[in-house]
Length: 489
Image 1 (cartoon, rainbow, N blue to C red):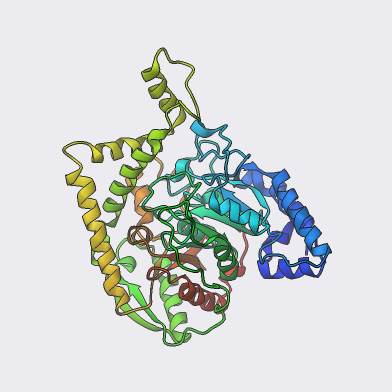
Image 2 (cartoon, one colour):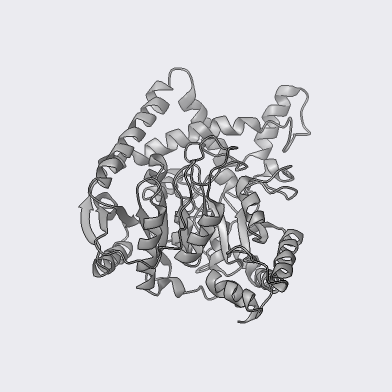
């Protein structure tokens, strides 16, 4: 195992090497940082590194191995955490200048779970400001680059988390998904990314974008790595009122079971006009693989999908405008020095601290919630959201899972859509319905286009269907080699 290539190995292989004392957890963390030194200037996956925290955890793992004590399944495995998840004592910026120097006094629940599972946090991953974007171009600090082609976006908002795994800087990572922000960068960067059921993973300590849509989830090089990471971060949390109080299954225990007889629906609306021909061909080839694995394929319609983009952005922006009202320069975050009175302080602090995309969403969200427009926009959007959920409920009467492209295109060039917000918003057309319905979704590699850019396939399922979804994804993965490909960096 070459030192700087260690993070290209799977969790299973690395754990075996750790337990056999072929490598140490400290050496694994060393390898992660050496790889970051090699490629970070090109990919810009991190906003900050947490070296003392990572080495502290790694040393604890090595001490336990030395005395033959049991260690958790992911102990010693390097992880990157999206910089919208609070880490006690370490800067958490939300990708925004308004929180450039904010150090949380507490851990998010998922950060606490990483600590309990002895998983070294390597650093805080780059993102679109407050998770608002589909390309990672809205970060206040730097634009993360796609490891497969540095001229291309990695997808957003969890672009840095996907890039860190794809480029071998870490083995696994955490992102957040409000409308596809895990699955889209997973597709663009050729890795596996999963959005769990809403409430499966605690949101306590997550900087909220749209509270009814946000969900924390894992990235990995393969499905098994994602299953193990999801296992570590899932569970009920009394600090989160939306947390689901249901036992967490052993997601990796049934991965190897076959999927004969599994009913998979193909979402007809996702393979029509607007889908790149190479993406469509890769999805159709993937469907054939599922048929060969014994799955039963059926075409399914989600009729209200045509209203999903408008519905999502009305709801998301409305909730964002309310959530971001707390950043006023009073208790924490950026405070303007150019203020003569309290109103100047509020206005100038927000004007100086927020980026253009965040300001756009605050303005649109405030408008939709304003007197005279609430019923026409926000209330109507919630009604359409209920109809979309009903479409999925009807689909689950016929099929166990649904299949579609993660995105209608592969990664696009940096700067090509930044001046056209509507075109950018349309990138989420394949992913946002899962957030509106609160159901889980996973993206995994299913091919490459003629420019050698990864193509992602998405599986979605009913509420709390992660176990069967991971099994279906694993069976597909074992029948292909797409997940074994690495960018040439």
